[in-house]
Length: 171
Image 1 (cartoon, helix red, strand yellow):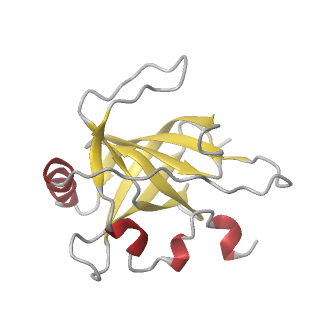
Image 2 (cartoon, rainbow, N blue to C red):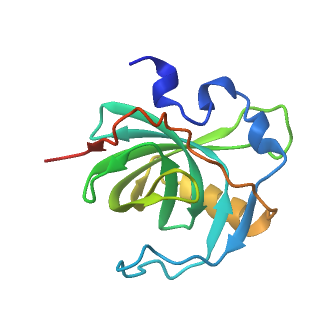
């Protein structure tokens, strides 16, 4: 599998976060997938930040943030990641003053759900944050979410219709 098959959003071609520079975050009200109980009590923010996902510490995949809070995140990607899977996220938060490089937050988490999102033509995966590395990154995220709001565009995963839908994660 070459890099581009794992990169449906063109993350690798946007090293400075230029795609993210004009759109940051905005508060959003969204519902969890049908039949799933909502566990996040704090405000969620729509964002279009790039995200790298390490599954079980080894498989690397790319996607985009759909919404984020201080305790969890919903990402869009091309994989149906099994609930209960340990993941490490590199969340690439675009600079407020381009052309600076994005800040990459490293967050460990556990997937809570994965559903196909027909509106985005990919999977939406909910992840509960377990640990920020370093812990000071949580304060950075809080400051960024609460002080910088703007409308972010939606993104569409572009999975080749000939590709089978795969499910990854612990057995």
